[in-house]
Image (cartoon, rainbow, N blue to C red; front, side, top):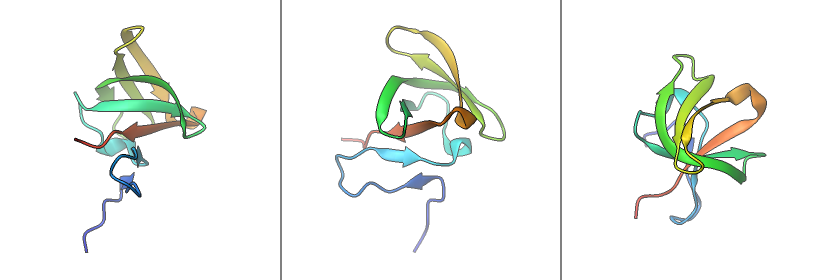
Length: 83
C-alpha cells in the first residue's frame, strides 16, 4: 500500500486534508491556513514555498494580497477535498 507522507488522510471525504509536509504543496494549489490546526485564518492559492518547507507564500482571496506564513509559528495547512 502506498503512503502519502506529506498529508494525513481525512476520515470522511468532506473533511479537509491536513498537510504536514509543506514541501509537497504546489504553486496554484488552493489551501486554507489555520492556527491551532482547526481555525482557518486565510485561504488562497500557493504562490511559493521554501525548499525546506518552512515558509509558504499565499495569494489570499480575501482580503487579498500576498502574505507569507511560517510553519514554526504554529501554522497548519489543509486542502479541501475535490468534489
